[in-house]
Image 1 (cartoon, rainbow, N blue to C red):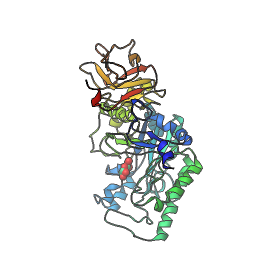
Image 2: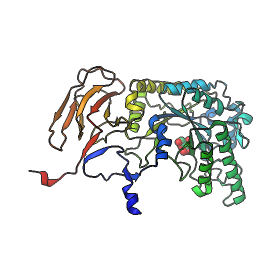
Image 3: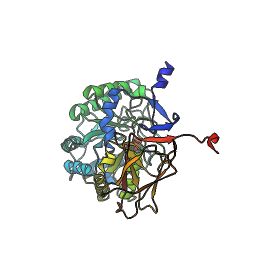
Image 4: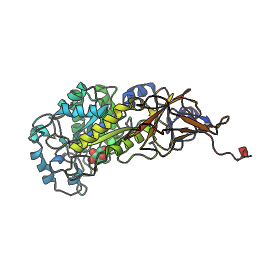
Length: 448
Ligand code: GLC
């Protein structure tokens, strides 16, 4: 039994790459089933999603839910924001069109954060339709607009609801109860009922859970919830915050330095320092920084879920519109290096980010800024059939130094005189076969 599991182990960190030399010992994980591969294909190929935090917290521009939980504002004052949540200029089609222009292939909207305020007219709990001047369902029109633009629909839903009278935790300092099976059962019925409503109405392609940490998978009845969601859409993708049931890992803020062990993952990242709209927070990443973080992420095999925060009136801050637009313009120049690609070579081989095409025969090197000499790639066992700068015509000059039997040399790629992309250039190396990298530990016996 142990052996058969061991033989099913595949490489993760360098998924899809094979090595000349010895078997590698990097992080491992079991091979996925064919059904899982099929279910996850669109997600793996998509590379970019846009996360939208929208809720009453945008009225005062304070931390979503956490501001009352952490006692920065009283609960009644937090809830007073309901009166200012108008959605007066909400244009779901404009949102979807912006997301499309950003190059993203999916979006995730906060349908209900930890504060319990639902963005649709749920039959239960607090919602913007009956409790705010917005007075209408805000989820449905966005779902429709996304589908019109051929974008996949992701719904964020917090398991925890700090407003619910049946939920045990209220704030960091206050609990409603510690053991009360009857109330907990009622809470389970409430949250699962809301998920049923959302499933029935909107049939999402992806569920983005959050707020799971206060209870165990068993307490959440996570398996039952998963089965229920899959009964509406057997192919639905579920993130790892439905405990024990996730299809993919969700590292948060700051790119992972080494890739997460999970086969599929998505880095969620804010454009400034806040998830929701906060007027005072002007600490925006530049488009160049976002492009750099994006290629870092896809170069390690992940997706980027880039977050924006809509204002209470439904408009999106110009800084975020500009970031998404610039990212989209850049992506549009290099789609072949992005969509459908896999993790590229580790940074020991190339001191930058890289991806590899689905057929493994083209390696894409992302070049940041203007290098002061040729770009260096080490340990490539393949022959390079052609080297090009994407977006330019003609081949790039390359020089191979120190190549010998079984020891690949150093490949220098000359960019002198080339018109480089001010954001990030892309070199495409067409290989003579599937990407193969040298991997052999230092061996003293080969020294002369
Ligand atoms: C954290 C926070 C939450 C935010 C989420 C996004 O879990 O609790 O406020 O919505 O991250 O990933």
